[in-house]
Amino acid sequence: MKCISKGDLTAIKLHFGETGNTTFLSPVMIKPIVESVKKAGGNPFLTDANTLYFGSRSNAVDHLNTAYGHGFLPSVVGAPVIIADGLIGKSDTDVEVNLKHFSTVKLASAAIHADSIIVASHFKCHMVGGIGGAIKNMGMGFGTRAGKQQMHSDMKPQVDPEKCIGCGKCTKSCPKNAITISKGKASIDIEKCYGCGECLITCGAKAIKIRWDSDAKSLQEKVVEYCMGVAKGKEGKIGYINYLINVTPHCDCVGWSDISIVNDIGILASTDPVAIDQASADLVNSTNVNPLSCAAKGVGEGLDNIRAANEVDWSFQLAYGEQVGLGSRKYELIHI
Image 1 (cartoon, rainbow, N blue to C red):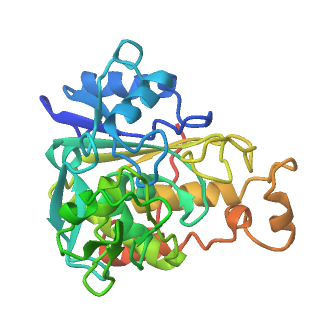
Image 2: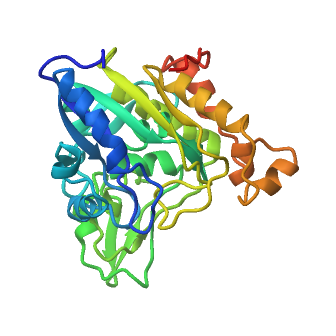
Image 3: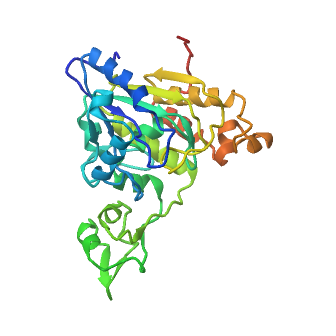
């Protein structure tokens, strides 16, 4: 725990698991991290930011109840749970990155105010990102709901008139005055809208839809840029742990858990998010596929183990991460 100094407020970034999912990292696996942070002199807390979609973690109350229900209690893990972007996902800080997709990124305030961070990731496949490892856990995970909207979509939100009740809350929240109410329904001016996602957060009727149509390369690069925002000013203060167990075809945001595509491999640790994700992917791809997994068919067609699960090229984020200086794809595996 060289990244932790005495007195540090240390964020342990993890995923508490969506209700119905069982393959998220268990509290039993997180407790040793908490104990190690304390031994290093840090003051740890468990954290994640609210989700963009309306599941069991889209606001801090539901998020905390989900975390507690999954066993992430202070009495179990030895550390409190703090939702990084506040009650409804609006506790954010803009961080300047000046990269290809974003000049600034919208990050959960707890990520910015923490002195050090341990990113504990359940490494698995992902339906858009290809892989869900350290980069996705930190970048997408620490984005606010507005930030997640920016990462997920190159398009604009749209109103479902059947669900809209014309309450006008979205018009008050829009920073660009792009929303108006006409004949009892909200309407978004796509010329004014810049996709910040504030209306998604505000709409209690769930009448504003998300367009999940960014291509994989664009989304992965955007996630990397959010990682750059998290890492800015925290050089040498972030550690990464990837758990290569229950390597499922989909992320832990789904309300179920599929069969692992390979047998459990082990646990990796690094100070480089690009290297640890590259090593994790290489290990998964060099392991025999579980014949009971849905990924087995794809491997037979010549795809690698990970890409077979969703037919998504997972390498964009690693190449871009190396390009912008987030880390290196070169690594050395040291067995302990």
